[in-house]
Amino acid sequence: MSCGSKKKDDKNNLLLALLGMSLGSKAEFKLTTANTMAAARIANSSHFIVGPHASGLLSDLAGDDPLNYGDADAFSNHFLTPSAVSMEVCRILAYKSAAKGGPAPGTETLENAAFTPFKIEGANGSGQVGAPDFGPCGGFMPVALKGGSVTTESASLPITPIPSELSSEFDRIGIVVRSFSYYFEPKDVPENSYRYVDLLLNTPTQSLLSRGEVSTKIFGSGCPASFANSASFIFMQLLQPGENLTSACSFYESAIDSSSGIFLSIPGINYFANPNSVLNPPSVAGVNYTSANQKLRFKAPAAMNGVPSTTPYILIVSLDNSNPGKSNLLFNISVDNVLFWDSSGGDNVFSPQLDAADRPNATDGNDNLTNPARRNVIFHLPTILSEYINE
Image (cartoon, rainbow, N blue to C red; front, side, top):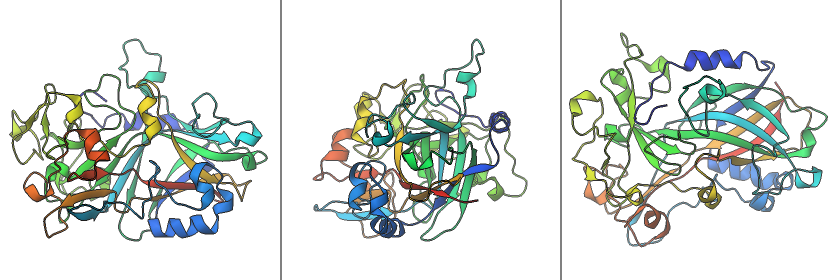
């Protein structure tokens, strides 16, 4: 991953890296709905003993109630659910309960994980002199899931299973994710430059973007044209006849102005100078970049702010350990209504560049997240729960 663009050439190398792992067990990622997860959480609350989960309350990865996004202000609340989501998984870690010698909730690190079911070293772990520094997420495997109101589609990664005789002692799973990427349909988000929205969690050390920021993918002209208006970037089977993904395809990671929803013109990743060189250029002229505080940020766990940029940030997911001894892990995921915005417009179409009614009016990225009196645009992290399952 370079500062401003990313190429898809490394997938084969990463797939080869997986061959050394146990192929007999898997971590399955499955999309579901927040309502389904809430019902399961209430029914099985005694099995979740971490933080707020013991009460039976459902929370997303930032600790917010996914059934109660929005605010009570002078603007109408609007919500959208992406039709597809991709997560770039670097590591999966397992933590024992505090009673069994594990870390106290909130103090999880790479070092105090009792087991590591999944890990990719990537370039950082290669030992090669001069290898690029990919930061706290040195290598990753993408997990792509198709969304909608109800779906049974899932995707899996091979894992080394948690030893069955010890599985009841684990109560948390940690996931190191480079980013979550949300794909929005053109009917919901007509601006192609907002087609793929990324929530950045573990960015490369030399990146011009930082952990906690919202970015979108601006594709170079060497990419398949369908990337601009379909989910073919994360589902290659959706490529149109005659389209091929080659090394000529790269993309920029954009930055968004939190006071307008318009893209920031940042030196080094300026895709405004030659809009013909990209497939999905911003719809209007960019906002001059003067400070990192301008950047739109997503709703993240408060604890993330204290983690150094070179240290992996670990998302902690509750593990239902009521059925131990099974070799596979299931991650139920909801992305319902993860995009919330205030608008005076009458439709439920998000178009901040072309429709002034959809634009945020915060003073900076933090103000947008914390001041409900503003016209807010807030992207939320998914809601994820885990459990043991059979093959």
